[in-house]
Image 1 (cartoon, one colour):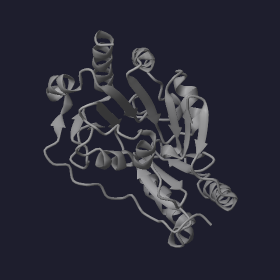
Image 2 (tube, rainbow, N blue to C red):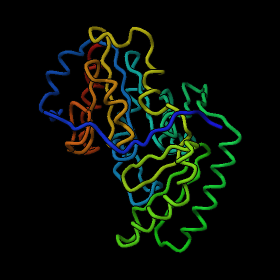
Image 3 (cartoon, rainbow, N blue to C red):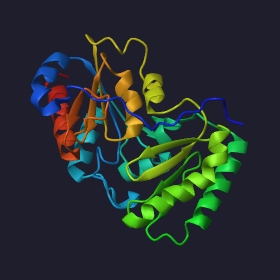
Image 4 (tube, one colour):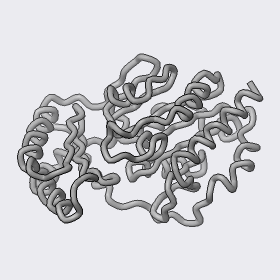
Length: 282
């Protein structure tokens, strides 16, 4: 079942000399004038502020307006890559001409054409079994939210009281340990969330490589931006070293990103500035 690949994404490269993008932005904009622009973005914590529950992380109206303008520009490709399911991501954003990728890139919608990068009936059955087990064993934990997302499971514990969060992790580890040891599942950790994924080498980094056409990494012709705030974005940050603008949202020393922004409001400002340049130089 699945594959032979197994990895725990627990460690992140230590960020060194990370630059505050707002201090370097004019230098960047001068370099990308007239170029084809690829903009890849995470959703939660990047476009929308982190919320206590996934359903409350609403895209700000001003950000939506800017994304619509960018998506209409012939020289700009916009893709949103999230841990949310594809259906949920499209529901939260509802902007045409944008590429949507859910479940960390396992399912993608490119202009209405859907691609699924993992289909395995045995894994689907295992995932449903794990989902039922987690729900049963955590039913008495107040604030827990367990999401079944067709090819992944997310266990959110942001609303769980501090003293109970260790209990969540203990139960989670007991439920998945044997499957993890046999490399039947991959476990990843995000901001107050534990995730179960298929045992394949595929994530946001691999998806960005897949989406970029041949020749797009020529920095004289193309500018590639990636904005993300979580561990799951680190694969893209590493991939873009020397060939794009990797921007982590939220100051941290534990990232492979070259630049950082403070919050989603600054992301919006950068997107607006890029859009302004595209409109001035069609």
